[in-house]
Image (tube, rainbow over all chains, first blue to last red; front, side):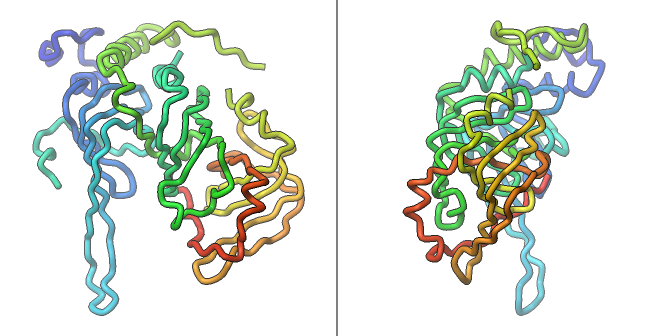
Length: 105
Length: 112
Length: 97
């Protein structure tokens, strides 16, 4: 099983979604949050609620603004980095170890 | 004891920034935490007091866990290796039997 | 526990931030494990970017825990030094889960 990739994993087989999250421990991953927030960072801990601890986090917040004259919809992104963060699981929509997202700014 | 409950207990006395789901950020010293991850801070300050003067005369506060979005932590105080091991342990324990202690030894939770 | 956490605020002046972004100040008279609280002599502080803080008397209030974001212990000495008429600020955002 994919479990072999992580030599020091305990608990054995891949049976449920959280087993896949376990494989991302100490790896960088992408997290999509509610309210148009996206994070990438290194995962160090999580629980069954998907509460998480991540380090070297880059957060991108996307806001939609309406140009008052042209009524054009403008997507604006703001970014910040946070060295170490606890993320409450109830705001998490999805997480992905995919490197495709990592360059996403 | 649940992983993040014991994790936050280990950070008592350290400075954190709690970011709420109403966009307010509160900087302060972590005073205590409970099993719902409600958090008490002492000696608080608001990073953007011009925008948020609403808590100017508050120095200590209780924050309901459910309204927390993030907690920014002092990176040097987090033992990431230990946390990763505790995470794997809690996951494995959760599969075998519900309830078993993870992390450091702790007194039993009592309810009145 | 949540109980022991709020206990020291009983009979003290507290400032509550509610889920819909209001600020209510009063004396904390009681609470339970779900953080339902009782406030006596309470008033709301209504913030506005165009005028000073307006205070609206409310009296005895019971606030359901689900609608409470923050319970702040009000430092009355600090509070008396603040001139609420001089403060201009947007109301707080509601909590978005």
